[in-house]
Image (cartoon, rainbow, N blue to C red; front, top):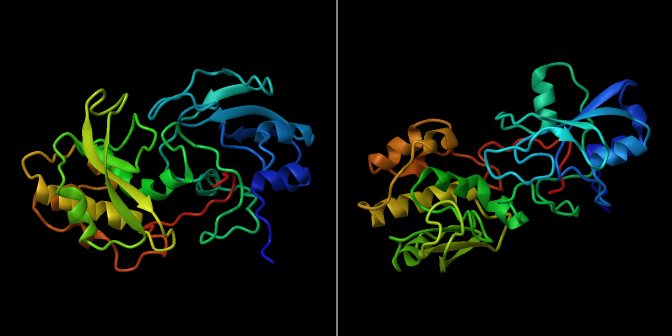
Length: 286
């Protein structure tokens, strides 16, 4: 029988001696919970650890701030501890960041496998990441933030829903003909309540992931970008933010020159389609 998943936070709450005695700070937010959904900070204090400050990343400790924003500093209502804004762009899990900064003790998760669901409750890490399905597609469809298509912000299915007023009934058949694994494309219409095309009727496509092990989010998004570029050359547009989202100007240049962006991918990817798998070492419930 597989070992039950235990996050580093749960282990520490049950075994305070895993860290040296002293004053502690915690980088966390509303997703930092134990399996019983108690906030990590509360659980650590109840275990007797000397937690003295909280540090909130993007979206803030309570998760009320939208993308690119954070909450005002103050005191946490659950613990009374001071909260400091630490909205960092490091692209790492907290444990990875700690190891990069130098000597650190990282309490790893137990019983977790990238290829299997954790069995832990899903807590949305962002106002625009409502479900685990959103998280599955986001590594790819997040790139649409760097285009003039709506990435679904302002809808109930952000990043699973992509569209623009100029998209017509040619898109879904063209995408289905690409025979991408692990998903089905469905034509959809939506009206975002904020962000791109707010209040406008938008036509587009919804991604339905039917096989998580086969689905390749980055490859899928690159194929979608290629098809959109081919179908709508006079309307499809790129934004300056695309270079930052991709990490270089290579994707933008490939699209502008009419080259297939899929060629930018390395020859081998992981089964889940991640170009950079990463390691989740500390908090998180997905």
